[in-house]
Length: 409
Ligand SMILES: *Cc1c(COP(=O)(O)O)cnc(C)c1O
Image 1 (tube, rainbow, N blue to C red):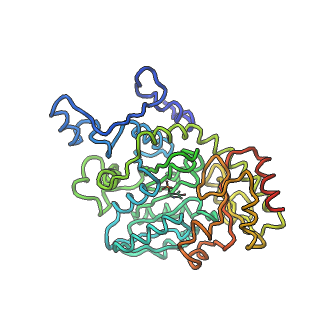
Image 2: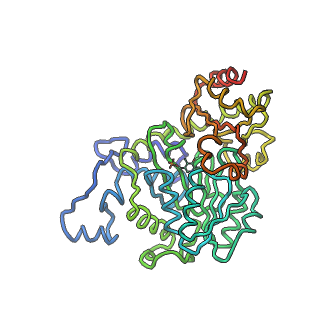
Image 3: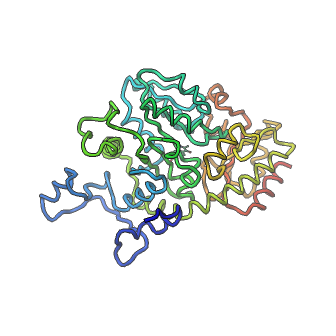
């Protein structure tokens, strides 16, 4: 049968297996324990000889339903959900890397991921930060102990776009695990599988849920990495289909043992949000394009960072890889010192650190989310002291243009 379209797959996915009373949603199973009729059955479930649920920290039917939807959106083989995006990301790195390993990461990174990678170095994992917009920098950083390459699709706040395809080809040739954080593009704009990524990580708290009322994260195995080649898979997880070994280890060590489980109620909310993902992304992208063009012409603005502008250094790459240019942009004012003044005049736009929300949000990044890392690291990411990051929402375009016009006047 022909694979269903993106949104059709989400809105009808739950009904593909029977649900009580013809309910169109998978019910919320608010439950910790699962009871069995016989001890034999209980043992079979625990030994993976029979499908079933063992304990709420490891699995829940509502979360399983969300995981199936995410696997479909990412065209992956399986997905594990976590309580937050950071939980998904940290569990993935902590379970697949060991002391003595080397990780190559893009230097253009979400602030908390940057901070987490600093923590990894305290456990004896080496991390090299490189300008991943050019694969040559990744190649130059490779060492005999390199195990993993980590990049984001569209970096925050200055929207650099990693050399996604060339890095994929290189990782494949070198048998490196290629982890792509797809949060900023979301599966509605980009499938990391198309560039040969091994794992795709999403913060579900952002545009996938979209409504700013639930946290979640996920890691999807895209089926392109041969885990039988990977030295860090424990003997006990080298069983069955090697395609599943990586996620098996992340599930057992990263979810069961570390315990950052997604709540079933959150899984339900995320699944509801995801139904309109493609629609919201389309609207937010078109608002973002209009705003970027407006900012680009505005005399008070020195620089606009948005992949949808032809002057963006990776505009052609974005056009070739993504179905749209995203809803995130940053601006530098001619007068850095006017940054707070402009922000304080915004009426409709919310001053907030979040992104991918239905509402348009703005934040002075050097003073907030990128404050802790200090001026040197900020400069390496292209952030100036007056950079304002804007996450564009789904409001009516005229209202957004008017709000920014009066704030900049
Ligand atoms: C927000 C974000 C995360 C972390 O997600 P949480 O759900 O907030 O923990 C990771 N990566 C990127 C690119 C993000 O924007």
